[in-house]
Length: 128
Image (cartoon, rainbow, N blue to C red; front, side, top):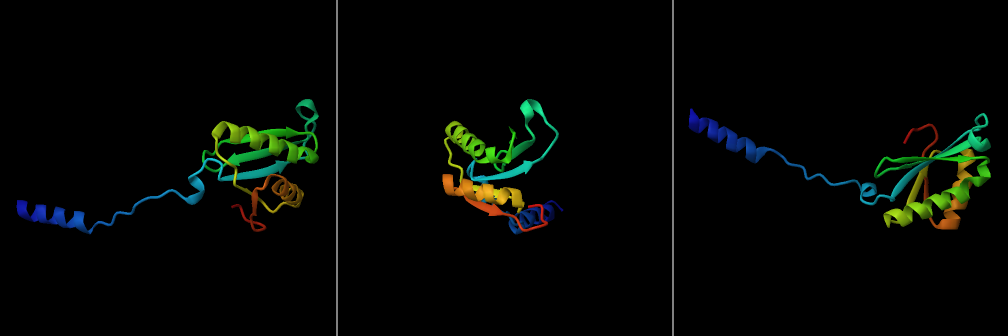
């Protein structure tokens, strides 16, 4: 009986498949991928802000909300945020992913041209 249990146990251990887990490519660098969204117009908020820019870091899942008075403030605020975060983390921002919202498309294209960041837009009517 004892031998049978030992053989069964040894056989189970040898036949089990172990999968080596590796991190997804966008999870290797804290600033490899970020998600951006602009919300608004809202009723006047603090200091007259009608919009806010939401930034989510895919690596840490930390989010930042930047109040904006107008949409035209988006590029300067994104550039300021990028410089501060890159200085703090010592990593370079690589890819920005956003929904295919028309109000954000042109802003992101301008930001990509100015700061050299790759922009990925999701397919219309999807959540990722």
